[in-house]
Figure 1 (cartoon, rainbow, N blue to C red):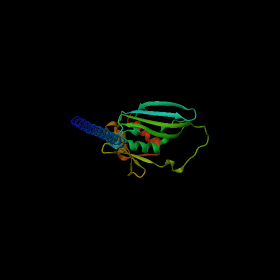
Figure 2 (cartoon, helix red, strand yellow):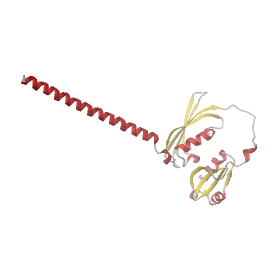
Figure 3 (tube, rainbow, N blue to C red):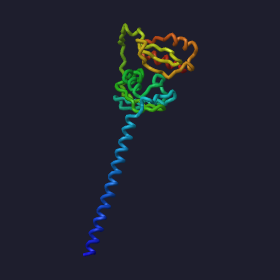
Length: 206
């Protein structure tokens, strides 16, 4: 009888021990999963709005031709118009200016941001080859300035046509400018279209 009691007591203790060990293990797994999800969500939410593209960042443009099913990759330094932008500003820029990423003989169907960091950006575009045409369109409003470039507090800033809404903080400083260009920007330079804007900004840093 005494032996049977000892066996039952030992079995009970063993059962309780296994239960406690199993509970603690499961709790540890749950804790690990919760912590992992938190880190992933934090990474996804991120602080990308506090990260801006640096002047020497690597620029990678991937292109896919939906007609020929061919792809290509261009690696270069970051275009000046993207310097100083945050992730959300780059997405906005892409949405407003998809044709900027196309070549002369391309029709850009879609552009998307693939990867973003302060030292590297990857953009992907879907394109088709444009057919030659002899028809040209002309809009009277094309000659009206769409942007204005000013030098304010030693920083080159692009404003929209109302001269009050900031379109782009270029990251270009007065130290990078010729004296003549700096004087022009203090007075303000009117720009007719986005292509001319990019050409001028590029010229300020070369």
